[in-house]
Structures are given as structure tokens and as C-alpha cells.
Length: 388
Image (cartoon, rainbow, N blue to C red; front, top):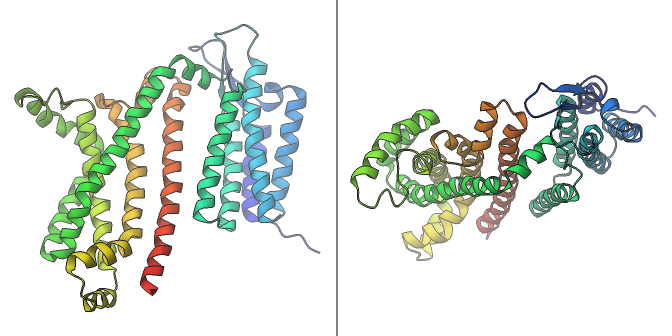
């Protein structure tokens, strides 16, 4: 019987095999500021570890190319990811001279290419399996727990990224809370303002175009420019309004970043609220009127629940957008993970940049998975309401 070849598997192999054989796996530096030396897999790992990694990579690629079952592909992808994550820690321990606290071992292109290739395989397998929303959230939590266990095990202790973290642990968690406060706080504020505004646009059609156009204009202003535009008025308020400065309102800092994030978040929330309410079948509303419901009752008990998938989609967009944009707040003293990103750029320290970038990506990815699951659950509930 002729064995079918999976095209995506071939692409994954074309990424993974050069990463294993021809691209540096790590970069070794004698200290933090000198130029790094690229080190390939077979020099970066003990012989037994390099052989194990090679066998796992080959096995994963065979399962990817030969169209193995979806479950087999998912298990193979997970095995590949865990093996690469463990291997990078072993490489750091192997290359760092004993008792040398100045040497730095950083991730290089080969590591990221292998991680990317196996992540593609895992995402493809999950897309084919189409797990239920709660299963997706469980898989996300399982992945985060696994990463936490690897970090706690000490296998990554010699990695430069972990050394950057250990020397800044206090400021890392402080900036993490600031980042979350900016992203989530601005989302909650924007939702509290945007939902009533969306309902107003739905009820009063002549206001709809004007309000949406104003929000569209705000959305087109570049984030850096918006931060700059807010400095002058907030600085004036802080100087002239008693108590404003004590409340944290200043020309620079978290206040202008927070306001800018709220302004950017309004358009998706208002537009999707209007879209969701307009999409409610008029027959359903008329049936509710026939049952004697008031306009307020129809809005709360019929229209808003039916519009909830669209509203949740907006919340997902805004949350992911705010988590990413909050990074720029560091430019005006707003704090967050951007502090490490911009310090790293200034010092040409890639690991410091990663210390700010990786948690931001992880937060955004987690938010997207959770909100996607909630949106799907809301969509199912909408169908049940519509057919009741």
C-alpha cells in the first residue's frame, strides 16, 4: 500500500533538519558583554544527549511526514517540544565551566527553529482534533504547569535568560503586576464605557456613524503619538487640579498609557456590540414583545445574551491587543514588561529583551485560548436560546 506524504510534515522537516544539523543551537559568551560564539547541537550537548535529541527529532519528523494518526502526531510534537526544552538546559549546564558565574549560554537560531517546527506540528494536530473548549483550557494549563515544573527543576538554571531573571526577580514580578494592571484594567474600563455606548449606537441609529467614525479616527493614531498627545493635558491636570497628582495622574507614567489603551479598546467593543445586537433576529425580539416583555427586559434577557459571542470576540481582541501594547508603556514610564525589552535593546542584551517579550507572548496566547473557549461556549448557548 502506497504511503501518503503529508505536505505540512515536509515543511516541518525542511525547518527542523537544518536547525539540527546546520544552525547554531546556543551561543556561548565568556561574560555578559563580549561577543558570543555559536555552538552547534553536537558540540553543545554531551554525546548521549545529542544522540537522544537526534533520535527524537527524526522520530517526530517521520510521524509528521508519513501522515501518522492525529493523536500520534500530537504526542510526537509534545515529545519533541519537551526534548528540545530539556536539551537547551543541558547544553547550558554542559558548556558553562564549573564555578564560573560570568559565562553566559543563550538560545540561538537552531533552538527557536526546532521549537517553531514542533509547535506547528502540535497546532496542526490540535486543529484536526478540534478539542472542546474546556479541553483546550485544560491543555493550556497543562502546558503552563509543565513549563513551571521545568523551571522549578533547575534544568534551565545555567541559561543566560534565567540568570537575567534571578538577578531581577523582584522587579520582574513588580513589572508583571503593572503589565497586568494596565492590560486588564484598561479592558474593564473600556468595557464599562463601550457596552453602554454600543447599546446607544444600536438604539439611536443617527448617532451610530458619528460615534464609530470618531473611534475609527482614534484607532488610526499611532500609539507613540497618542502617548505624546496625552502628556500635555495630563501634565496640566496634575499641576492645576488639587489631588490629581496624588491619584497618579501625571504627564508621564501609567496614566497616559492607561488612557491610551482605553481609547484604543473602545472601537472593537462598541463596533462588535452594535454588530451583535443588529444581528439578533427581529422575530425573536417580536416574540419577546408578544410575551409582554419591556424593551429593557428584551435587551437584558434576549438581545444581549444573543449578542454575547460578538461581544466576547471584541473582548478577546482587546485583551490580546492591550497585552501587547502595554509593552510600549515603558517608553513613557508606565512600567510593565516593556521595561526589560527597552533595557535589553539599550544594552544589546538579547536575553533581557526575551525576559520581557516571552511573558508578554505567553500572556497574549493564554488570553486568546481562554477567550476563544468562552466565545465558543457563548455561541453554543446562543443557539440553545435561539431554538428555545
